[in-house]
Image 1: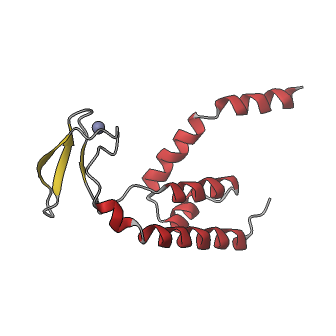
Image 2: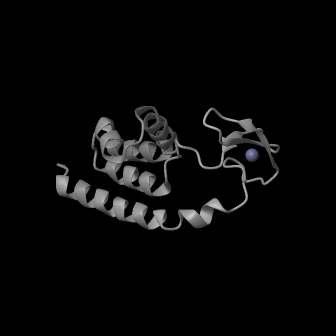
Image 3: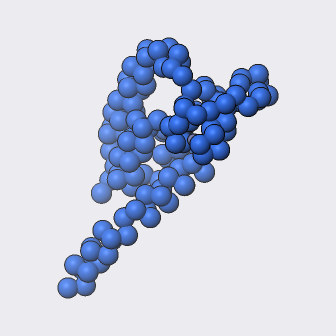
Length: 131
Ligand SMILES: [Zn+2]
């Protein structure tokens, strides 16, 4: 199956419009009290500062250290949804990193996680072919 560049273009446009909508609501999110990005616990303490002066927080529940508004933000669920679609289109992983802006190492981990979640489906398909 050939992938149409137009489909990729439309997906990117869709993603950009979603991100723009998110931007308009970020100011409200900044005022929320800090909670752990890993376990969601609000049992956190300020734990000195990182190099650019932002306060660093430490989760007392799971031990994770984090900043409230990290410069290197985590990949959004919208981006993950786009990547899921791109993976189905069999676009190269390098191509996906260029389109979505995620890092190469992040995408490798993400794909490995995905693959580890679907061994049963592959087995079923193999059995059907064998018959
Ligand atoms: Zn935690």
